[in-house]
Length: 272
Image 1 (cartoon, helix red, strand yellow):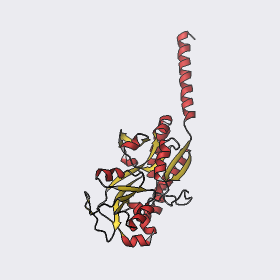
Image 2 (tube, one colour):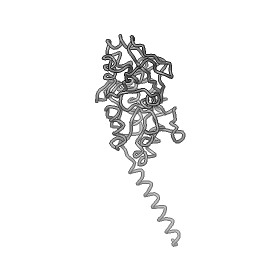
Image 3 (tube, one colour):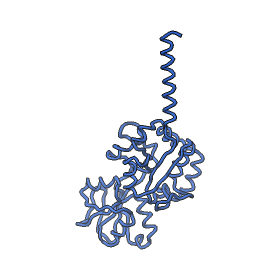
Image 4 (cartoon, one colour):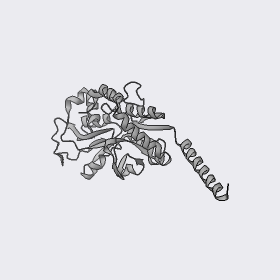
C-alpha cells in the first residue's frame, strides 16, 4: 500500500470512529417537565404526581413516542414558572405544552418550518385564553378593550405568554401561583377579572360550585396559541438527530390507529 492509500485509509477509519462516537454519545434518556395543573384532557390531575392511569392525552403521546424510540423517559410536574426556569437552567431537557414567543425562543427550540415560525402541524394542542369576571360586574370586553375595570387589577397565573398581551393593552395585573388563587381574589373583590386559559378557568369553576354560580367567562377570547413539546437549545445542540427523530416519530404516533383509540377515551374532556 502506497503512502497516499495509507493516508486515505487512516482518514476513513477516523471518520468511522467519529460517527460511532457520535452515535454512542447521543443521550438515551430524556427528562421533561410539565405544569402541575390540569389542561382539559391534555394534562390530567393536579399536584406533583404524574397519574399512572389516564395522565392526559399529551402525556400519553409523549410516553408512546419515547417507548417506540427506546428512550428512558423521566417526567416531572411543577408550577409553570418553575418549569420554565428548570429548562432554562439546564436541569431538564424539555417542556410541554408550551407556546412560542421571542423570549422563550432564546432558550427553547420548537419544531419549525423556518426560524421563529413553529410548525403548527406539530402542535400538541391549541388553546384559547379569556377574561372571567363576576356575573354582577359591569366589566365588559369587546375583543379590543376591557371596559369598566376601574382601578382594579386583573389576576393571572405566573409565567403565561398572554401577560404580554395585558401589558400591551395597558391593563394592570397581579400574578398568582395557581388559578384557584386568582379566582379566590376575584370572589373576594380584590381583582376585577381573571385572565387565564379557557380550559384551566373552566376546570377551577367545575371544582368549585360556589364560583361556578357567580363567575362568567367574557367573549370573545383574548386570543389563542398553539402549544408544543419544546427542547432546551443546549439539549438540541448535543442531541440534534435525537430531537428531530422524536418530533417526527411523535407526529406519526399522533396519527396512528393506536393513538386514535386512546384519543377517543379522552374525547369528552377535550375542548370543543
